Image (tube, rainbow, N blue to C red; front, side, top):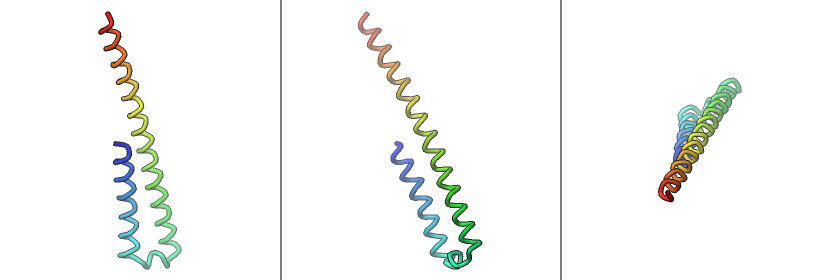
Length: 79
């Protein structure tokens, strides 16, 4: 699940960058537009990182709950 999320997010960002470069190559020649593009990409990377950390935290919490439930079931079956 985590790999799929990361792959989709990375692919979306890369495709967006490719579309910008393909359809607006003049942005690469203009320093102010290049700076804006750089800012946007840094922002996207930051957002992806935050989402990835949030997803990882949720997965860890789910794993802890699953382990507790498994332990509780095994304790119940031993009685």
